[in-house]
Length: 331
Image (cartoon, rainbow, N blue to C red; front, side):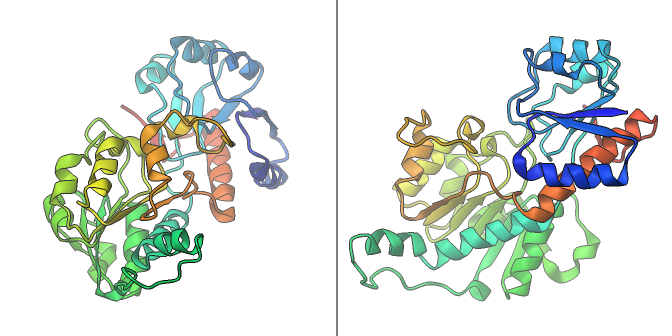
C-alpha cells in the first residue's frame, strides 16, 4: 500500500518515519508541493493522499482526477477544512477527514504568550528600549488573576484556553452553543455580546464558516472596553482586518495578539525580507507596539506536529481499508 503526503515539511518527516515503523506494510512518500491542478497527477499510482496547505482545493479537475486514480479519500493533516469543496469531494466519492484536535495545548499556550506580552506591555517596552528609553510611564499592568477572559468558541482549543486561565485565577466566560459539562466551574457560559462588553481579553477559537466569516467587525470592536485586548488564534477571515486596525488606531481597544489574519496563507511560513507584503492591514499591525504578531504558529509544537501526521495517516489507512473515520467531515 502506498500513500503520498503533499507539501511535507522537514519537521514532519520524523513523524512519518515513526509511523511507517509501526506500519511496515505501508509506504509513505512525500513531496514539497501543494495539491493543485498542476500537481494532482503526482497522486497517480497511490492508494491514498494526505495534504496540509492553505491554498484552496477548488478545481473540479482535482477531484475528478483523484477519483479516476481510484483514490477514495482526501485526508487533511490540519483542522481547518474550508479549503476543500465538500460538494465536489462527495460527487467524486472522496471521503474528507481532518485532524480536529492534534494538541489543543499548543494553541492555548500561544494565546497565553500573546496575552502576557500584551498585559505587561512588553511590545511597548521593547519599542522604547530600542531607543534606550527605560521610562515607566504607561507600563503599569494588570495582574492576570484580576482579569476576565472571554472565549468565543469553547471547543477543544477554547476549553484548553479556559483551563489555563482558570488555573491562573482569572474569571473565564465563553460564548458557544455547545456547553461542555466536563468543564465544570472552569467557565461560565454567556452570549456573544456579554463577552464583547465585559471581557478584558477576548480570544477567538471558532472554525471558519459562512456564519463566522467577518463576524468580528467594527460593531464588535465598539462594544469592547477600551482597556481590552483582542486575540485571534483561529482563522484570519473571522476578523475584518481593516476594522481591527481602525479599532487600534482610534483606541477602541488597547491592543491585539494576532496569529492569523486574512490573506496570511500567501505570506506566513515564507521569507518576505525586503519585499512588499501586499497586505496593508498586516503591514500596519507590524508597526504597532501594542500588537503582538506570530506567523500562524499556534499549532507548531513537537507534540502537535507528530499528532497531526499520525492521526492523518491513521485515518487514510482506515478509509482505504474500508473502515470509517470519526474525523470525517461533510457538507
